[in-house]
Each structure stands twice: as structure tokens, then as C-alpha cells.
Image (cartoon, rainbow, N blue to C red; front, top):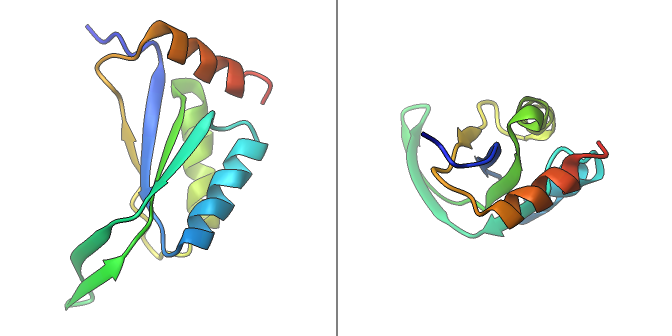
Length: 109
């Protein structure tokens, strides 16, 4: 049985740091997420038959299950990629104090 208390993570590589920050701020302003982390990464993948080797900032957002669909739609609307990677991850466990903070942070949205 999951003990994640309804907290979910949204994982989304972005085209630039500016894009990741813009999306994160918009989601925070709309109270769709409680927190965003931006991590630098190097991504290798095939796109249109060519091997791509790109720097992609990874946006990781913490939100609630009830706000995740709206957050994902907003990301899709703001993202520069034709096919953005938007993954919803459900942690097996989240400590209660943190879960309460996440719920409080998105509650007024």
C-alpha cells in the first residue's frame, strides 16, 4: 500500500534554463505546484532519425494528485518541445510533515 500521502512528482526536461524557470514560476504563481527543482543534465536520444546530444535542464515539480492534471496541462501549453516528456511519478513514501506542507502550498489555488 502506498504511503505517499497524495504527493506526486512531475519530471520534465526543458529546452533551456530560462524555459524551466519560466514554467516553474508560472506553476507556482497558479498554485499548481508547491516546489520546483531544476537540475542540469545531458540527454542523448534519437529525434527525427538523428542522434541528439543535448544539455537539458530537468524540471522536477512537487504537487498533489488532485493538482497534477492541471499542472501537466499547463506545462504542455508552455513547453517549447513538439513532444515534451512529462512524467508523473508517485513516490512509495513521503514523510507526513512534507506532505502537509505540499498540500498547504497548493491549497489556495
